[in-house]
Length: 467
Image (cartoon, rainbow, N blue to C red):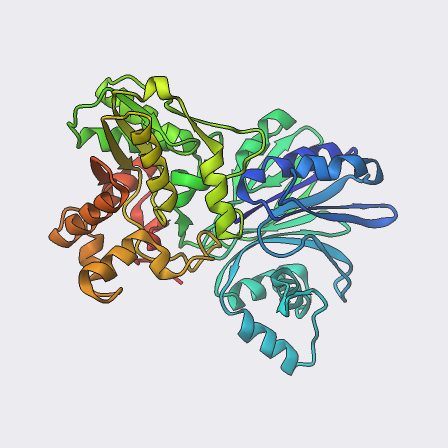
């Protein structure tokens, strides 16, 4: 994953850049970086944030940053920002996305006698590849267009130049970018939640493939948006921040509607409703409200030091984070019938451990309601779950157990209520030792988001998508 933030101001922008970038920390735990441009040129810093927060890594050196325009990034991939010297001028660049044809692009560059300096374990820095594609053209706008056309996957980016910031959303709009305004300053962000406390108003959601050039006075459109949108539905289900909006649709509001939709199809008798912290909470509030059941917190999250468990790159560390961050409240568990809402089941390992903890604390029953359909297909478009193989997905692993092969009748398994779908769900329920398990239907999820299905990427559930 990852998140971008940039700002152009008629006064020093460093504080806005620092806090605005930090507001994307829920999207990554590997690296953070900032770059500013001032009368002396560019100043940049990149830090590893796997064992410490973005703010703590950058606070001590803020005094060395000054300038009226800058870009920042939280990245779970390569070190960023990069500062590139080229015939277009010197510029800074940050990117978010996933390039599936990296090997092909690098091979073509080598055939043209290009070279790359930023490698890690022999792997070329994807952001440097994007910069190379841009620099082959005669203008930044043409270069960005050429890069977007060449990249298979997705790539949203910010370019920090002498005159301002170029902001470009990926070709099919799978990752968001939104512009914010306040008097004397313009900001660009992956998340609208970065704006309110910095005094910015959400002003404009970039469309798929759109390019803006931003100055302190506002922006100019340098490329109009394309007609085809494929924004990632998981933004609302899981990894988007509750206070954020995408395409003008608030995350927390969608989660309430998801929970309510689950409740309308349910009549199980329970004593209380709860959410797996943090992203399951909104779904649980919506469920409890719809059924007029008490909402409680039998699991609480220890927030000061533990990150989101899907992010640490090492699986053992992911499992440790998942175990340590949730603390059971035995008094709310013992002797009760519990219903939990969660955003999704990816591998199921963490959820199985949590369910066992609840039974160990005296729960009579543990029911689980999942806010999205069963994950069957790995994501090929952004870096969500990219480190996991197909058979790491609980849904696909269960299909192989039932069919003997992992890719038979996937459309039937994806269809809610079909015999194969019900058999898959019951098998997962048994493996997790749950009293009952139900998933959201895709139709109800699409309705909860409020965009037409053809404008949403739902590939991980039903395999449908545009390239």
